[in-house]
Image (cartoon, rainbow, N blue to C red; front, side):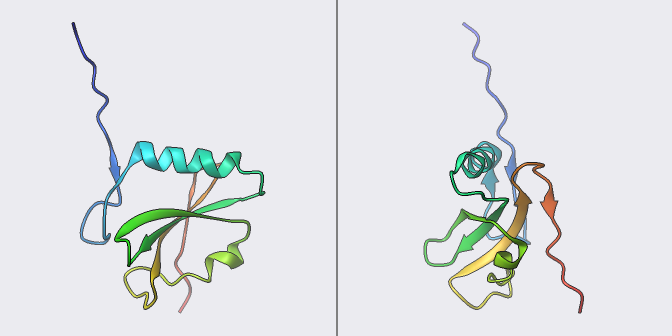
Length: 98
């Protein structure tokens, strides 16, 4: 009997991120956002300081993204790690002009 194991890719690994994320979990978060009855357009990957874990936050506009401070400078209980378009799956630049 041969068992094929799918290699699990991890995202957000390294010193610039608080925790890695399994790609299968990421894909399921995208799918959940697309299937929502609310017309979400974007998925944010947010670090929850109290729970010490990454979580998805779905938003309808870019303006809603601005409610989150970027990791690692965030002072509150949540920090924005990354943002993605739910349909193109493209990563959205979070850099703001200084």
